[in-house]
Length: 295
Image: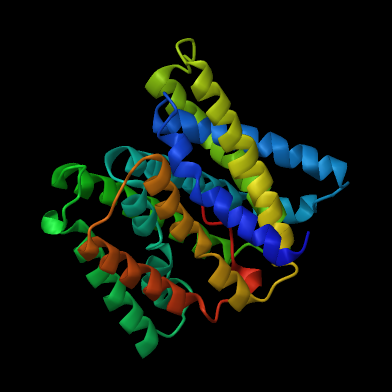
């Protein structure tokens, strides 16, 4: 399987996650915790099969960053899953794609990168697009109040994911696969006390559909998708990755429309085009070495 096909399959998998999350009868924190556990176990098994041996010295050197970024990934998932519950998958996904905008805003302070005129235009485009999506008069069927709450959850998820992107810039001597595996394990470890406090890990009332879907999210949407994602990065150029990554939000909108009968008004579609267009322009020059998985 070539790199492009791997990445296309990965983006289609990521684009379908919202439909499964909406059908799982668990809290967002429980879904995030179980996703991390199952995904970690899958990637550990893959690591043993391919006889991959990480550098324990490098793991020790980056331990604090890996732990903090892993916790950020767990919180990122919780907020994203909460976003799915309050607004449409389309709005949640587009709000989540604000992460590169947050990175651009913070990069001059965190990474000492110059804020160019192109980046400023991208930020303004994204802000206008977000306003059009949130606009109470845009005709969202979920209700304007829930819509705003859901989008705020999506933006919170984007903020945590942006923090992961920035922290990963400072992690040295580890591959993207190694970083993701450790972050998933760290995220699950950090989420455990919170999940126990919130729900006491009581899964006795969970139905069979939820069990099947949580296994799909853990194995397919996390373990398999992340494995395909990072193996594809080794074969593709950064610009190709940036372009194909937009299969994720586009497929998410289409899948939600087909299976959940969700729709967007023309104003919201315009807003979505502005947000995704802004993030696309901002990522054109990103090299594949610096990218991480998105969902």
